[in-house]
Image (tube, rainbow, N blue to C red):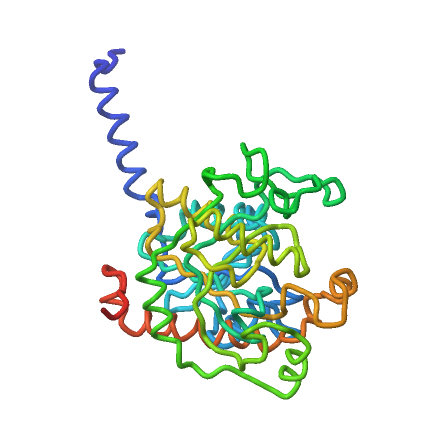
Amino acid sequence: MRTLPCCLVILFAFAICAEAKSKAPAEPSPIPVKIVVVAMFEQGADTGDIPGELQHWVERDHLDTIYPLPAAYHDVRMNQDGELAIVTGQGTAYAAATIMALGLDPRFDLSHAYWLVAGIAGANPEYASLGSAVWANWIVDGDLGYEIDAREIPNDETAWPTGMVPLRKAKPFEPPAVALPGQVYHTNRTLMLWAYNLTKTVPLQDSTRLAEIRSHFKGAAANSPPQVLLGDEISSSTYWHGKLMDAWATRWMNYFTNGEGKFVTTAMEDTGTLQSLKLLAHAGKVDWQRILILRTVSNFDQQPQGMDAASSLSAQRTSQFGAYLPSLESAYTVGHAVVAELLRDWPKYRDHVPESPK
């Protein structure tokens, strides 16, 4: 019996493999995403109960398609318009892990996607009132550093106004400020100003209840009605509270931004979200210039007049914040105005990041 030459056997094997490959189902193309709405928590179900940061987006924008994302805190929800939403989970660690899981998921093409972080926050009553919506440009980490207990601070209020010390420094706010990687983020200011100008006249809910709550606080903006503002954020997994901590945050922001940032809001996740987005941008998965941070004021970051910080903190429960529901409405109302504009003229915004008026 004669055998086929070796070269013919190889060619025959290649032909069989090629035929099998041609019959195999083609890999689906990645789903193009136009905008990612990033929420941080949900109270219960995504629909039909007391809302968290996701629910208004799901119900009102019909984010009915669910993509399981087991490597993240929460599954992805999406609609047919290219709008996607994700819940990160609370704290910087959950946020970083969830955003990285989404960014590396091969099912989604995020190369042209805009990212809108839309969540609630505490605020400095000098600069923002309850229910207000604040666009941030500087986001500074409030966790990374040294700390000694306040009871052991040296008896020198000038050199030691706080027990928080920047890493690699010997005392608080020691110059020059040297931010470590992941400690300070500066988003696209031009895009932020475009979003602010688009939304600055959007009417926000006010009520006699909000007016009564804010009447107990001192601060230049405390008794103003809700409005759309510009202001920067301290992001930390530590939920801090009180006038003295507010004074620390104000100086911490000023220190790490060389006076360019103005502390207005405090939240718990955004440096984690931004860290993952920065790394994903390095990998060519996302566009760093397409990130927006919107935080709305559910509560003030300090005690009202006539109350100490500990008593005030004990009353700080998310769904019981005085402006909890109004702040969720503000996040959706203001954020959705940006989403709607991006979707309305997507052929333009897909390839060109919008600019603020000159």
